[in-house]
Length: 273
Image: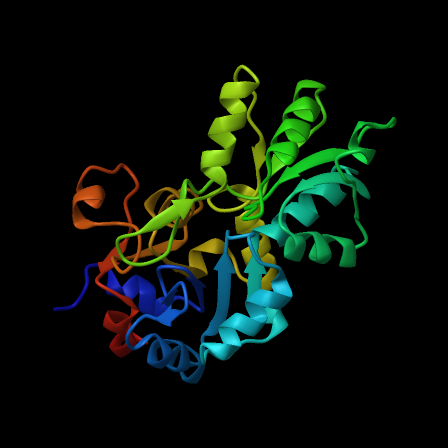
């Protein structure tokens, strides 16, 4: 069976692949995902990976993707941390920030020239230029309290992404940054961050710049309706939903986020490259 609108996918000059739930689940590649990625490369189309997940640094992601057997170079990977870096520099929120992130992400931002203040330094004047909320898998109550205090003092508040859950297996998940955002929104009486990852404009800009193509010539393949598919739909990309991660057919049926193409997994796309 040929997926609906598959010709739109065939015409794209670049394929952007989400990671978790799309080409692998945690540490297990999705069946035939290696064949899919290799076929993109041999087809002459440009290949990129995009992840909202900031629980790991760029270097760690490159290592993981390679260890799982997928071809990758630094230029092929785009992350929500890249989007956050661009946003912070564009608004002159540099170099002193309060980062809610694990040690791996802190090391990455320090390598980019940021000064990531600790929980004592963050209270000293001048206050941090910004609070950056990432997917902190080492989150402590001290970090929560400091972040809360800074938000209440109107320090610019940015989140790398707003995914509610991160897939672990096909049917199990763990709380992601979107859940943290809800915590701070409740605690601060409704304050919300600027979100820079998928599905927002900063993510599209990063993709188009890296691919050197307009959005309409790019296919985004992902498993999440409210990030991957919403971004594709809102910015005129070809959105391809795979049902190998978070989204079920029932969720799709009740969603206003409409992909151009729906397949069980990336394996169904190989013959159309």
